[in-house]
Length: 101
Image (tube, rainbow, N blue to C red; front, top):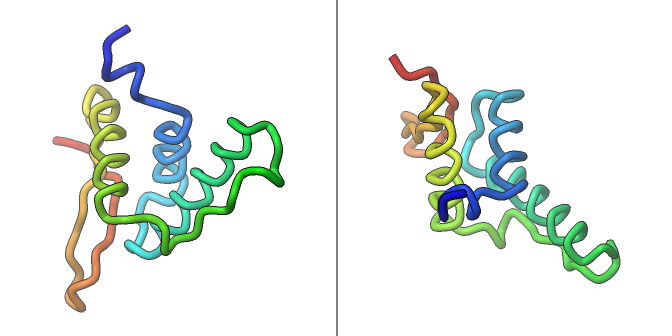
């Protein structure tokens, strides 16, 4: 198992599953989804829902999004998919799962 595969966690898998279901996330929605995924992951790791603090969308940074998307894309490239960031006309960001051609 490579270092890259060891660093690929259930959080990355859940993020990819969210993109498979929704295909597109405005940046604020992606922050909410990632916060929910990380909260559940922490609760499972601690094995007690009362001990793990809830992570909110405000806690999610652009750097975290870039890191998780980058790792997810490493796995998706082998399947000819990629999560891309698009800038909208109002200057907001949207993340979208696309098929590579």
